Length: 52
Image 1 (cartoon, rainbow, N blue to C red):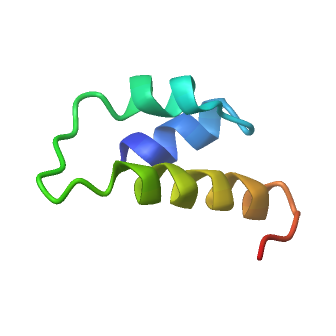
Image 2: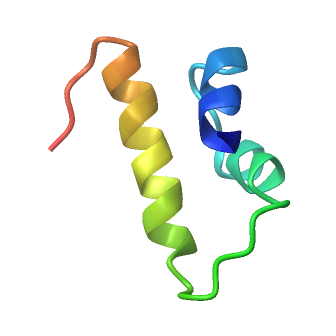
Image 3: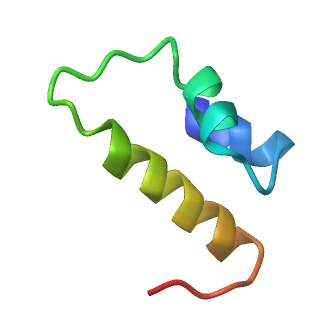
């Protein structure tokens, strides 16, 4: 839900924007880089772009 809210208000979030938005979520598996990449991919898709 935090990622969805971020993308609703910011269509092109930076790493810092993502870290701030996700700061209330604790991930015990340590996949923060993959979470960040997923949010960026979602932003690109929502913008109508393509990603590999």
